[in-house]
Length: 173
Image (cartoon, rainbow, N blue to C red; front, side, top):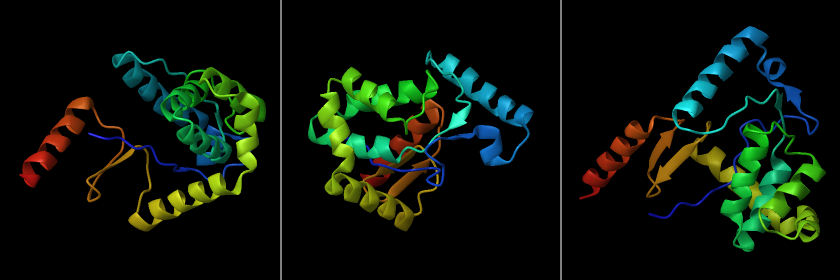
């Protein structure tokens, strides 16, 4: 099975400097904290480190950088670093210094990687991907598209995802 990561901005209207999660969603801080606690608990059950980000940040630059990493064969490595930066370290993915550090940690030349943020071809790739996502109705993350026609949206328990993929495979026989 081939897995292909595609850019998608869940909150593309987020300013680069970020915005407090509770403020963005217009919910009381206590409600957001309960939601984040559920996420921390689920991550802990899976043995994953997770620190609820206080700040929702704009990810456009990170997606552009990811397109450069894709061309360099380092997309998986960069994604791991970007996820760690956001969900474990609580860093702002719109901050150039953070992106430079993540590029270096992923094994990319940080100066060349940062220069890629100005390349129109990478920006266009991200724009096309976002447009395709809108066209097919993607509204949440993660979204898995299987064989171009089955869509599984949301973070599901492993067993539910496994069963859905088995059902898809059985249907195709």
